Image (cartoon, rainbow, N blue to C red):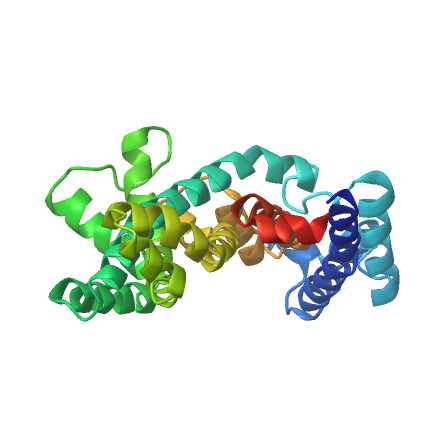
Length: 309
């Protein structure tokens, strides 16, 4: 198991290096002069050129990229923000708890809705409940998070006044963002749970358990569900990583002070170090979540644990 974890951690290095190269290249070719944006419209050309020299923007691409990578590897330095002159990593870490909390709440909403609905749909295949659930699952997959967030604000904040329309300072503030972020993932988990359960409940050992007189609840939850969880856990892990990145628009709609909103503001202001650091940090978090999901397989399925040994 330890050797497997070590190999997976080593495999993260080329992934993160590739992500850093792609993001740095996109920021490099993006139109706009960060020095001119920092100084404002009243700055003279000479002042802009001096600031470009101080920021290292006149150096060749490979020099700037090499400085960016070596700073991260050897000094754990993601650079300094062009706008606030504060360390990028410090700004990200100060806002990451809000993003992580929002993504975790979104996953909880998705799991609480998706797994039970998927199980019932599988056990009552082609019933009215199954058909209605699949229609809503299709709608959930199709609706963009930002549109759903605005719709929730319009209904539950503006018209009904049940929840605050923005912020993230209390449990009441967290309800609408979690619903907006979690319902699309719930649709994916519902569909995966249903298909996985349908495949498992047709196996011979399920018929044997029923023939031996086991209660239907025991057959479904102890025998079928446990063996159907592997693909479901995979989808949940991927959705959690997706929600960390997908929180960008949700945080913007609900005015949540998280990493996603920070990145949106940084893109508008051409704050390249903040955007690069934010994307790289999210990529690292997503990779670690995938590693955790792979390790979790061993505790769900003993056959996978035997392979690790």
